[in-house]
Amino acid sequence: MGGFAKTQEIMKRVAITTFGCKVNQYESACIIEDFEKEGYVQVPFNEEADVYIVNSCTVTNRTDFKVRNAIRKALEQKKKNRDVKIAVTGCYAQLNRERIYKMGEVDVVVDNNHKDSIVDFLYKTETPLFVEDTSSFETFTEQNTANLLDRARAFIKIQDGCDYFCTYCTISYARGKPRSRKLEEVLKQVEVFLEKGYQEIVLTGVNLGLYGRDFAIDENLLCVLQELERYDKLKRVRLSSLEPQLINDELIDFFVQSEKICPHFHIPMQSGSDSVLKAMNRPYDTADFAGLINKLVKGIPNVAIGTDIILGFPTENDSLFQETIEFVESLPLVYAHIFPFSSRPGTQGALLKNNTPSNVVKERCSTIKHIFDSKKEKYIDALVENNVQISGIIESKNGKYWTALSDHYIRLFCKNEELEIGELFTGVVKNRLFDGVEVTV
Image (tube, rainbow, N blue to C red; front, side, top):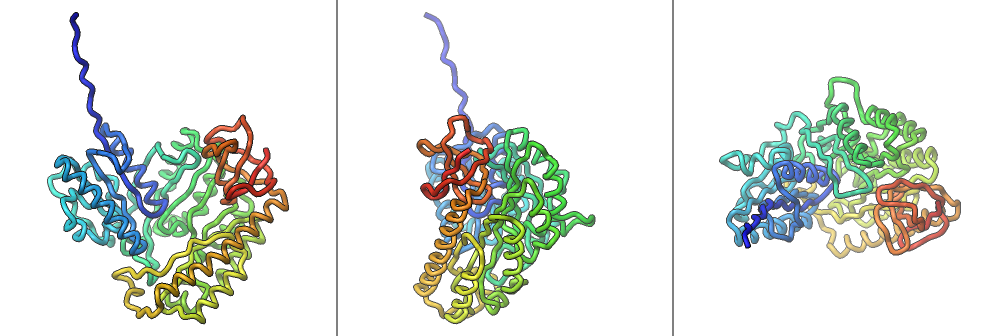
């Protein structure tokens, strides 16, 4: 019996692990698509691959540790197979190139402005990239993708960089000056996602509110939102973190009348003490912040507002922490991301003497967390009591219930056999369920 053996082509494999913000998540999706165009398939980071990519973050010491651990795992794979390639990029890589190369045989460290060229650096150049200083970053680096892991919503990076130099933060050093994506390029990416069936877009940026400040023409975040409002296929627009001083009355007026903007905003506060805010080099005070929050709550029914808070900053004593407690309790906020202060090398905050024991900082974090746990409970109770109408894009099924992250940033559950993943639906809140609310259509 004649015949021949069919040789199966061995696929090239790429694995990526992503740390940090939604900007990094979007950039990782773009990086993977670049490799897929070269014939690679993506595999989990803990599996065997031909290329390992670490897209890093450096927001805290703990994050730095996790990044280095991921690099070591990739280096272990290289010990097993000398042909394995390793690329490290992102904010930790931007600030720690030499340290990364000293860890082992990392093939290339790629700066934040050249993530679109990782394939080239690995295979089409003879020497590793010298990480460029962020002062040389003049324009927004275009990266596009048609594929995202999230089937419910699409993230689009429209802005990069920050020049605020808050004393606790390295991002201004790691990302460079503010740079914005051209509006026509933003809309092209939006249209790609709409053709893919996405109905919710999340706009992201390192400092999103600075969008357009680097343009010679008069174009800003409001211009982007006004354009998005015109797309019939686009049902929801969600904004990532917005700095409070960049939310003006014109933006608020648009939020109030928009048919697409989700009634959910994340606005970093960082501290409820004017003294600490000044030491952090934050360009607002508690009165400014409270005025903004109250405007949003007054203008947008049932709006969900979240924030960031750093506790244990070197100048924060017990009295100033008490100011934060009282300020937080006075505000109609729903949730908070709470961080213990992490001294970052190269920042002004790292030069301040810190006498607060770690156990005290931990207690402060716990105190603020309990306050926000109560705030979220009261917010959900109000949604149930008032039978508020909310909507969401179906993400998955949890037993008998479809589940989604609602436009109000509350997990919702719904029994309806006609729904399917990726579908937008609107219903009325009926009662609490699991970690969210049950909705009837």
